[in-house]
Length: 304
Image (cartoon, rainbow, N blue to C red):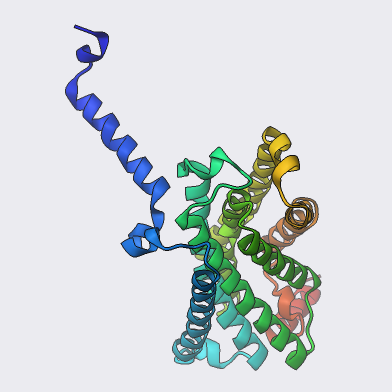
């Protein structure tokens, strides 16, 4: 009798089930949406464009639906037009943030294929996720451009981040490389749903509630986790440097690491600082001329 036979059958069965479950998640996450998604030829331009257009249409419809449903609330109706647009965009970003968190967790903890070749490996799930991402950033950049033109309000960091992301992920879809870093990087959007909650609570006058404080506490620590993920991506680059340097197309190399350097050294530290300050002093810096901010500032001056 060999040593394996001495292991209780229920333990062996449990390990096999867990292994099968992890393998199923890693190989076919898109099957949870529809089994046919696993078997499409994502290298065809028509398939990519179909999913990108579908993603753009979905997020556009979600923005419209947010405007319709939010219009039933007094809080939304009391906002100015540009704040209403920002509200709807926040809802869309929150939905995208949830999607990215799921994909990012899959790529980091469950994937077994992309990690085999961090430059050229692809999976149906990575193609689907990145096509959705390109569609989202086309919607987002279009909405930002229209909003900036109409309301003459420009956020340098936000525009830089989103336009670079659009260019980078579009190149990634065209070159089919590197899906590993592209899908892992999506988890950086894990803070977005909580940023949406932060802003909507602020606009609804709930900035001093327990829910606000709990959300801000989670949000600040998620920005700390963003830094952890960014360091993780630099570490994976170090581990696979020979492969990255030899095989990654130069345009993709520049797009990936310029964006990663900006996020690591500038954007995440700045946003972490701003959200920490906002946790102590709940002011909406996106609309510093709003009535709520003026009331808050006047109250602070009187207290001083």
